[in-house]
Length: 210
Image (tube, rainbow, N blue to C red; front, side):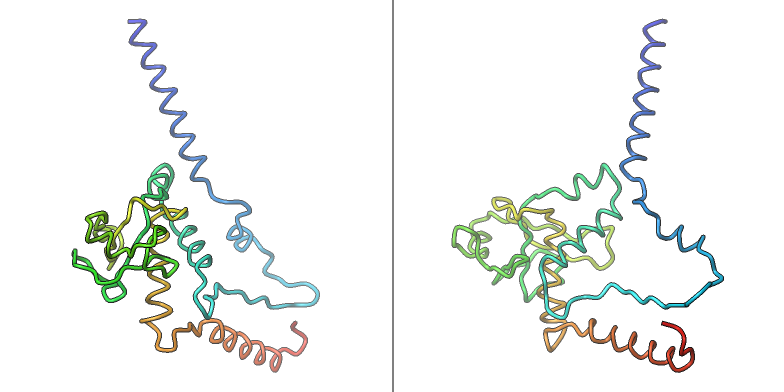
């Protein structure tokens, strides 16, 4: 009986520790700006100002930008400890630019990584690695709407989560290539056109507002 009681106590303590660790690892970042927003004083005093902000995509593709965006998205969406698996570097994510939205296995003709390279560090094309049977087909995720598959080269590690390099790869070859005729994203200019026009109308109606 004492042994059983001791085991139960150990299980309870271990369970509480694991629960507390999960809560701690998945805690909300501080400061909580949303709480600031809800509790802010809604009666302005003194000189009134208007602050405009937005997440703006760069006009030309920047690998680091999309890598960081993808990393932050998955960090927020995937809870710990599952994100340890999601952030694992299982190899470099490769895509065929002619089949970016492939959902079934196919025979590729040219494979590229997130930096636009079509060959591995050893100088041999990735498609040659496919012919040698060194690539793995990764099917679309069942949890991501309209997700697509990709090939993974496990002998070469990209230095970051494979799932992140997959998204950065897609952004390079679709958002800034096949998806936009000019191969430039007009998001920056469009957002500032809206902001500048809005501020101009504010100045006309409320001259004292900064």
